[in-house]
Image (cartoon, rainbow, N blue to C red; front, side, top):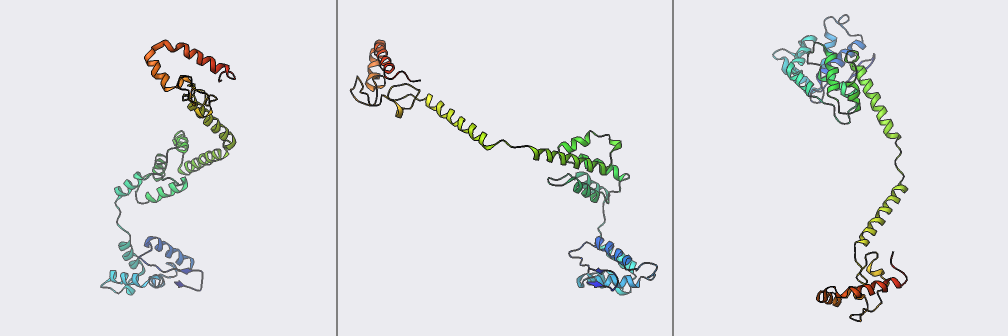
Length: 278
């Protein structure tokens, strides 16, 4: 750390984990805040001392190698800045920068303010003739699909600026989220009743489709049949009526329709015993 007794402390610069362009700007602001400028330091000796003393050991060694065959300590302040600029700030291709700008799209979870700020950073080296117009176009066209973008599409383009577009998009977002939060979900009790009713209906439908193995009707389960203890008139066994008797089925195949009278008697028996099933 490099400090003075006046205003602030200047952190050191390590090229391995810091950006030189950002640090250079901070260095210049630090010098202004501490009264070190071109007027008070015309030869740049103080500013050179501040810069070199703020470099970490590895960065100082790198700067010294870049200055060879000259001694870095004898170079002027502006010369040292130029050496470091040339090494740390890469050459930029205008069309490559514009490609990255036009290819950018708003990401999920990225606010409209963050999206606009990212576009400004991408446009920094694009050399647009009309920067604000390019930013506005890309801001709207690169937005995520939704009511915010639809609202901006409906605006008069000549009256819209980037700041107004960001403000309008944020207002639509706030209104949409507020409306969604105000929706009251249906009560669980009502859903529970509906679910029980559906289950009961499904159970009834299944029961209606199954034939009772005792009497042959479909309006009840075999285990609930009231004739389960009756004796069959054909085989004299309990557990089914003559209609469901295996022997009766064989006999029916042999006799054809001669058993219609027996079926009528069977229906009379079921009806006379506590009435018919519902």
